[in-house]
Image: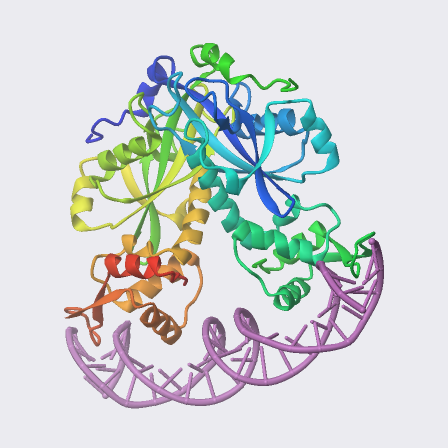
Amino acid sequence: MTTGSVQNINTWITQINNDFKAAISVDCVIFGYDDDALKILVSNCDMPPFEHEYSLLGDIVHPDETTDDAAKRVLQAKTGFTDVFLEQVEVFSEIGRHPLGRVITVAYYSLIKIDDDHLAHLEKDAFLHWVPIKDITSLAFDHYTIMHSCLRKMQRQIRSQPIGFNLLPKKFSLLQLQRLYEVVLEIELDKRNFRRKLNALDILRDLKEMEQSVSHRPAKLFSFDENIYQKKKISGFSFDL
Amino acid sequence: MTTGSVQNINTWITQINNDFKAAISVDCVIFGYDDDALKILVSNCDMPPFEHEYSLLGDIVHPDETTDDAAKRVLQAKTGFTDVFLEQVEVFSEIGRHPLGRVITVAYYSLIKIDDDHLAHLEKDAFLHWVPIKDITSLAFDHYTIMHSCLRKMQRQIRSQPIGFNLLPKKFSLLQLQRLYEVVLEIELDKRNFRRKLNALDILRDLKEMEQSVSHRPAKLFSFDENIYQKKKISGFSFDL
DNA sequence: CCAAAAGTGTTATATTTACACCCATGC
DNA sequence: GCATGGGTGTAAATATAACACTTTTGG
């Protein structure tokens, strides 16, 4: 055998029960969209030397749960939502990344609707804040790196999967949708071309409703039709913006 | 605070030093291309109840290394290569995934050139085998799931990044390159359109050499020019096949 | 001379881009 | 009546897809 320093799997049993173990955490980059800005939910950090920084929301992974479970638990506890879009992104395992010792973290991102219910829930926790991505120049630990990794993945995914709707209210206008893409991807889109494209995709349900109380011609409201999308996906069509 | 069952970060210190720890491993899906087939490098599994299955190559992550380090170590030990394309894919943390207890694994895939040097290295380890993806119907542990996850990610990435060259010899013909894409992506490509596209990308170096000793008109040989690609990438161009 | 792969252009179709005006509402 | 965003079509440019024959080599 020329396995070098790589152990045979049978030798693992000793290592699994000793100092080869590490603490595992999850960190969630929770994206929201409000006021024409992409924001993330962060917490005041209370751990030295990061007392004056914000940190991502995370927790240790418990012995009886998967990392996905842990991320869902964090989301539920911090946002009140149970059914949110959640995506695993990347593992961060640099040796000195955490002051308390070796903690390997699995980064997740999620997309949520910032609505009034949610904001009411938030008020109960004075340490939580929605901060525009643009205003964030540093975070505790390696969380700034983690945030950027999640942002890049989200920007990639939002172009090829209909996940942007998770950031909007159930009912939205086409301009709202366009602005979302412009803000998230930091690009400009042509109104007519954007509408033609969405029309061609045929995954929006026309709600036959109008915006109310706007000081301009009211827009038609739409919702994303997950069922239609799933059918179309199966018959080999691809969302692409 | 309404953090529910989510701990404050200051309470972690006790958990990090007790039973909240887990064993972390890496598992590598090592892709190679040979004989017009996509293959992966697997090992005989010696752990019950999987004695008659193959398993991926992996190891426990040591206390003084990152998961990337661990994956590189596994690759070096098993293939002899130190500089290989390596990509982190996904964490697998189902509670019962490993018979010895809780082991959370980070999946990686890598792309290597199956050449004579490598095959000579391999001969020293009778437990290692190159098996065509098409022939694999099951693997030990959850390794079949892991393999598929890595395969899907590799198929996605090979379309938008010039990583396929890692699977070919340094010098290759355009038809070899086309066949690689056809095999990996399970599609058919038009010879003339494929050549036009590559010509337009302008990232191949014409080596002014010909195939030797083939019983048909010899093809021109090319190599991938990483420098030219990097320059083009910076000035905002995108590889897309 | 036969088998095998190399190499090469054109046309039709689909997709993408650029662009400007009238409409409905609240104040 | 004015400010604000809503809503609509066309033409040019670009990218993609389909397709067949001659060339060169080894055996």
